[in-house]
Image 1 (cartoon, rainbow, N blue to C red):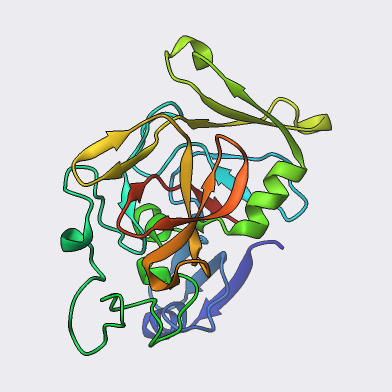
Image 2 (spheres, rainbow, N blue to C red):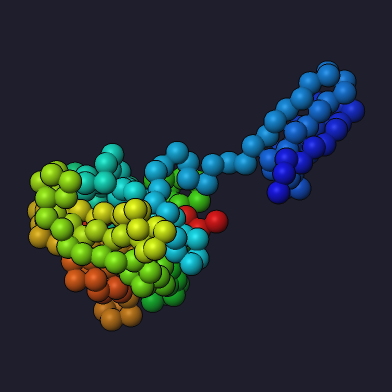
Length: 244
């Protein structure tokens, strides 16, 4: 679709339109009263973050790095499930978990949100660690998107990726996308004040049905296991996706 062109007699009419939910972007607007043109672009859905196009059927783009990482070999930040505030430098236990308490909205496990009372099964955007920290249209990949990734790429465990000294799993696009790669470093997880980096794990935005409100799903990339249960108080990295 090309740029939409609209003309206004008064600048106040332009301001009303551009701030309304009816505004069409991108557009070129011209105001006759001040003889001025305005070019209004669509917001960047990636918000400046690098992404990898693996040619997936859904058109999903994967972030090149973990949330909080500067390069693809960096571990990035660690998050307790449903808490967008990084837990990289704090104890990862119940006492420091955002949704743990004894208030009236707490369930039998002392979980105050995403529990047996509210029956919420998937993260809301305000609690999605990728969306809050990356902005734009980023969000945490769900099980279907992980399954699409593994079904439409080749992948292997690699050592000393690009001579970085970092091990991990590398996904590679197929056919004309064979030059596109997505790397997940062996970043492990945090429990209490300890960090264990003997595996590759990424949180999923969905609850686990195995252990009640205490656990959420994650992907164990070391063994390509999708949807494994993990205690919400454990902190592990997050990777964002965008689907346009």
